[in-house]
View (tube, rainbow, N blue to C red):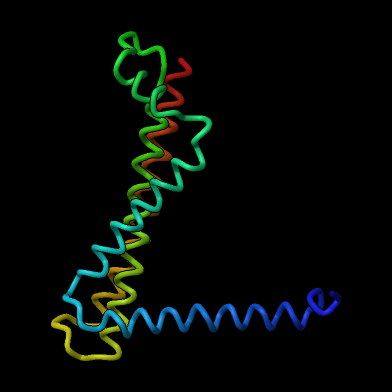
Length: 157
């Protein structure tokens, strides 16, 4: 078993994993060559949002239950229980998942534009759209952090 613990074996396993991921990316690029413009960012963005919400629900499954959340929304007339942080994290996770998924779709479109000059838009449009998705994630995160600071300041007084 010392063979599996050696540094050369770990490096080899890393190279094989990177090669496998690169192969999967090339298969995705090749198999989705004939789709229409903006279909991949839309579909992968939707899948990313659902995956993000599933991950959020799985991580918070013990802390936040559906009955407690909906009960607080429906029956808390005096505003003694706060659900705003939960709603903010819910929105952030869905926006983050959609934008990361869309950026992956834009990167695939960029790969299509490199391999095939049949698209109506330039190669740079997809690349800049993918990068814009990440910039929007940062801006949304900063805005939500600001809102959370204001919320915590107001709730402490």
